[in-house]
Length: 398
Ligand code: MG
Picture 1 (cartoon, rainbow, N blue to C red):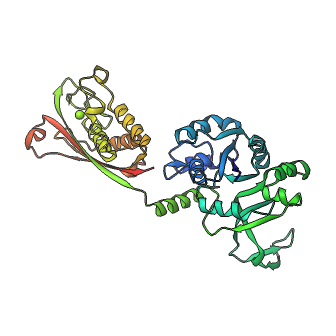
Picture 2 (cartoon, rainbow, N blue to C red; picture 1 turned 180 degrees about the horizontal axis):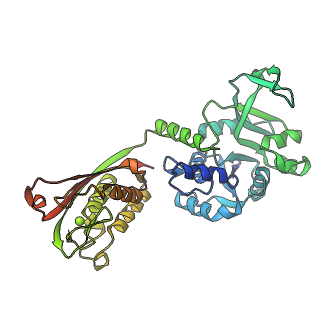
């Protein structure tokens, strides 16, 4: 059987979405909604991951605005979609799809067109669509309308009539089209560049297009609310795996060293001895992260024999491990820490330490906790000879 070509419409410039994301403290500088993260992976990648499971699809062509080609290529490669072709889109969605359509293999009888911003598409529904299109010029996934629909008189807010919803469906993507029929429709249909979906082009060109009822939830992520709903749905359905790791570190205190805890300089007459900057708190956090990800311990990654790490900034060491954990499919979701130190009082520094750790782990401050305790004069910490830190870090599967 001939393979189907898939076109993914990557959307426009997404300025409004970017603004909303920033206002809500979104943690990635997403150029558009398709690059915003849905449970730790860009929306576009989630869409492609789903489509990858449809064996009938032989090739994928993605259309994105020209200035997003580079970031798209980088992300696709990073997430194992290096084989996807990327083309520069046009001024409208229809023109973007046309650019991609021209790049699809001439041997493909059918093309599927999918919105990159529909990440919850069920591969089984796509197969059903491909089967359902047989004998027609195209087919679309669509859901029956469930609300009561009113038609108003143009120019007023007065109801003209209640529409019989039994014959109404809300169009989704993917949409399937006979490749040569769609190419022809672009040439013959007036204002083809303004079409908001492929089916309308086929219809206008006299094609027979079938509706395949979609039972699942396949929202188009258009604003921040959609993203939050989709994330709640995704994590509920997947039951994202979490793991927690523990880390502990102790450093001697000595005169003539700066006291750095949680990447924050603490005013004190003594500081931590150590090969690196001696930040016992970040070392405990790093070890907890390594523990949760099953990646060994800090000494295996950053040897205290290696001159490269002499006086090293422990923030950078932790960032390196966050990155390595991400490559293995884990991201931090929570950290809890305790600092045991007799002197000085840490209360003036706790907020800064918390913010610093949150920044390093890519978390909102609410997801990080920093507690400080003395040892009531007991033991080496109580005698002011050392600082000891404990940390728990929880990771979630990306
Ligand atoms: Mg240490």
